[in-house]
Image (cartoon, rainbow, N blue to C red; front, side, top):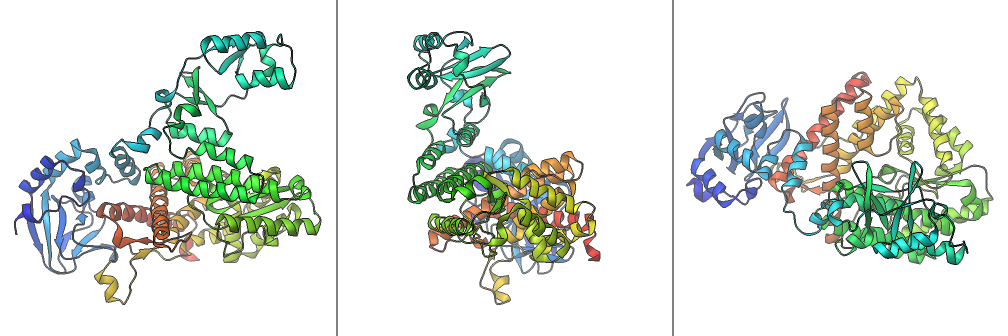
Length: 607
């Protein structure tokens, strides 16, 4: 067999090479034969070549336990080649042929081809960033990855706060702008043409009124060097049509939605307007479909998963806040706080998942009012396409919609209970975010929980045990191995295998430190800053979470295309590329290491 004939350059990571680079690989590669049971690369040892399987099967073992099964097209072991020591044993499970690509040839390609190099990074976070950076910069992704300065139009125009409304209007006309910066002593604000019109027409203020009196000094701004997708997030979150642009500490102009409107398909800052204009649940149903369509567009154009999650979570929170305004009776609205929990509460939502929500009330309300709200709110979410929570974490469940006093007693009861169900309920509540109404009720409930947990080391250890709720998967056991044990599935439940143990381990450490930040990435950053988590592990956990969120969304979209949608669609390993399986193995390896950190920290071996 000739190397040139058998080498498949279409298989990742070689699909990132130029034709000349492929020819160089083919010219320098050899072919190796390995007998069944032969150790090809040993854990802790270096390797002088990259192995690419032509035929056969290679077992990947860590401490004797099989963690993956590699087949034709798969490559190994980048760590042994580049970083000097393999992390696992690679053993031929049957007669195996491999391409052997010498280390010097690989290192030359790493130095000059970023996309190829990404495959060899040891850190998942670096690998993700390099792969993203190596993508072709065209289409929608290039727009969102453009800088604010690339879309900003016009210069900064400043007027003194003591000038009149009339003077401000003339200035806008003269410089052909619809907004001015207003300097008033040591503060700076923004006045728009609409502000001037409303002041004169609706409020009937004299034209001689100082412009400071109609100026907004709560300026929402962004740096000129920030990405456009960050601008879209700010516009969505603050319901703004323009942002002030800063450079080196001073305002240099405005970025308006019109500047990017034509560039961004399905522009997400238009959806809040549709939500705010909704006059009934039917109108919100249309907006809910818009949000889902936006997820599909953003993902299809290669937008980073964390940006998709942040945009989607912001829009969903606005959707549910408006629903609360439409269906909650006055007694519930005036005395209640609507909560979101789960991935929605953490701001890590993409496609719709379960209805994880609740309601806290400052005082009892008429029972008919509460019953009507529970039914109307849940029925609306059904119409929007949100599946009901199997565990009943919904406002329709009296356990999750009650007075603050009652819920505080419930929290203390769960702390005393020590059962897995009680621990899971505490975990669910810790991720709660206030969406509408009296947010101070949530803060009071959270402080009650922190107080009840103070000094409860044994409870935290019990709580931490939930990281082992689901068995660790053996990713990579595909095809023949699965068939040999009578299994027809090559699927991995990403939520159970990766997201839950990572999120819950971080959540446990955060509770122990009294860290109330919501998104898992912010919790990790706070834990690193507090010295409770190693900085390198923190980076890797954030990278692994990004991997899991990306693969989970892909699986959900694939399930939707097959007509079998579900909130927690499994990843079908047989459909992944070699590079995908490599980075998924890396991410699951990080979770395995993190489980050990949690077990050691809370001495779970003795429980």
